[in-house]
Length: 414
Image (tube, rainbow, N blue to C red):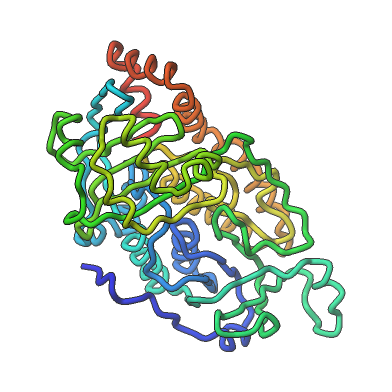
C-alpha cells in the first residue's frame, strides 16, 4: 500500500545529471510524462524525468480511470497496488440537469486522487530505471542559441535543457544534453523553448477547470446526492448548470473529489470559484453548500485547445501539452496513457536513426489522426452541455433509446 506522506525523492542531483548525455529528458512527471519515462527506461534508454513540483501533490483533475486506463495500468502491473491504495470503484453515473435525473450503469471505473496515482507512476518509473529530479524546473534551450554556441561543441543531434531548482536564482541553472526531449508540462507548456514557434489554437468559448477535495467529515450534500441518484452505491455525479458542469465522487483517502469546467467570465462575475460551484449545485437542487467556501480551490488555464505541431527538432509534446478537450468522465487520463504508449513505440522504431524527423513525422501524424479522433465524443458531449435545452433533450433521448446510451458509454467510458 502506498504511503502518500512520503514524497517521491530525487535519485540524483542536477549537477550529476549534467555529467552525462541522455537519450531522453522528460519534463513533467504527471500521468503522461511518468508513464512514458517508465516505458522508455524499461526499454533500455537513459531517461531523466524532471518535475517542478514536490510529489505527491494534488492537481485539477476529475480523478476517474475508465476501462482503457485500467487496462494500461494492469498491463504495467500497477492496477493491483492502485486498488490496494484505496481507489474507489464507481458503480454508476448519475447525470442531473435541474429537475431531470438520469442514471447510467457504468462498465468499469475507478476514482483516485492525483497525488496517489502520480506517486505510483513516478515510483514505477524510478524502479524501472529512470532517473528522477524533483522540484526542478526544466526549459528547453532555443535551437538558434544552441547552434551559435560552437565553443561548447554541442552536437546538432542533441537538445539542451536548462534545469533550475526553486532555491536558485534565475541565472543559476544547470544545462543537460539529450538526444530527445519530451515536454509533458500540461496546458501551460511552460518548458517549451522561448523563441521557437509552437503554434496552438484555443477555442474561444473554452472553459477553465477547477478542483478541490472535501473530507468526508465535511461533506454536507452526500445524502442529497444519493436521494437524487436514487442509490447509495459509489456513484459519479455529473451536475449540469448554466455556467458549466460539475463532477462529484468519493475518492481514496476518505475524500470527495469536486471537479468542474466553468466559464471563466462567470468566475469574475460571481467573485470566486466556490460561488460558481455553489451556483451549479443550487440549479440542481442542492443548497447545503456553505462547506465549499472553506475549501482550497485550484484552477487551470483555458481547457480546450489544439497544438498545430506536436514534434519538431527533437522535441515532442505529450499529454495535455499537445492539446485538450474539456473533461467529462476521466477520458483525459486514458488519453495520457495511450499517448505515452504510442510515443514510446514511435521513438523505439526510430531510435537507431540519428535523424529524428521520422519519429517527429509519425508523432504529428498520430496526434492528428488517432488522438483527435478519440476526442470527438468528448468534444460533442461538452458542446451539448452548453445548451441546457439541448442537453435535456439528449438525456431524455438516451433514456428512451438504451442503444444510444450504450453507444455513448462505450465511446467515452470504456
